[in-house]
Length: 520
Image 1 (cartoon, rainbow, N blue to C red):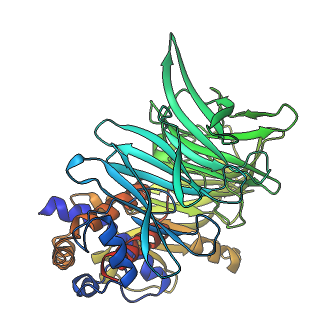
Image 2: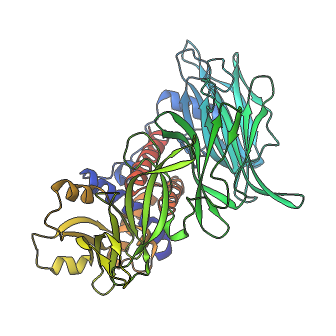
């Protein structure tokens, strides 16, 4: 029981934390009462379930595990007629695998099946929609996965009159897939990433750009990728500066280090380029500093992280518990990274802190006894190891919940966050720091909850979670599906790919969507 509770602990805690940030007072997505309410399906839902082979509870829905579309029943206008068709995924009964079926409703309000396809894959990785052919109608791209064989394949479906047909891509496997428009012609391409494979005596990794001009897709361009990457943790086709979009790939190497690759389109040579795919990739960062590319300042442009150890305040050696993360924009034109902002990742206490200025030299001195990190600026390091021009700016101290409750309150203590039994407290040490700097520190603090899976979770917390779990289990059909949602989404959190707030939002959306599908 304890192991199962710990599995749910992090996910539920993520939701609790995010909702506390937003000021919400209830868990809308994990409302036990809603879970136990009687079914209230609509006539449309009942008709679709009947066509799928049963009623509510009789059909085993299969949910896409990644991507923007996580529903087993997706409404989408596929033919441009102004009304939505339905894309559904469910287990293929005794035959095994997964069944994909398309439904439409006629002018009399009667639903019927447009087409049915089956796959031997037991998992739907992700679903995309995009106009790959330039006919003004979206194609449906499905990534299929099989956890038992650790393989993934892609299928593409298109509207043909009153039915749905499939482009043959049976031989195409992938590590990741993206919808892109590298040449900005408003026609999407399918970018297929294949991690390192042995070809003769050479180990190669390749990206292939598929176009769909005719009856069969074809590879229009290829680009070599970093063969050291064994898996990808985050991929996107995103804005990398004010005038250029590119594929941004965060991957993990065999040695555990992470790096970022940028795939762009060079108009002059009409080819894809990957300037960061080499042994001197400046984004190479150790496992402990496994930050992924994201839009940290919310300006619509993805920032690329680089990392280096912080310097310790007591000596010139690096501090192995802290990393300076520099968040950069990237220029494909001249292959340069331009710093935008800086954060310090404290791996000992599991938090990331965005700094008021990226222009100053920051160091961090950790006191492991008091669990206090003192952040300072300095001009340079002298020959004797002293820091010239050192100024202590602020500190962050970590308390246990018990110690914080017993502590005499001090006006100089600024509460940043409470997470996984830890209370994070900011104290300004330099009176000359501007009020805006203090606000930057407060808003730029990100608490991690990785320790939520540790054995140190209190029995009281586990008991509370036990009650939540028992409520969820009361809905006998759906405990496993909800547990899968929680486990899936928190895996991104623990990999550093999403913040607590982002994770909680996605959990809430998926559980709400699930409840709507199952209960109305």
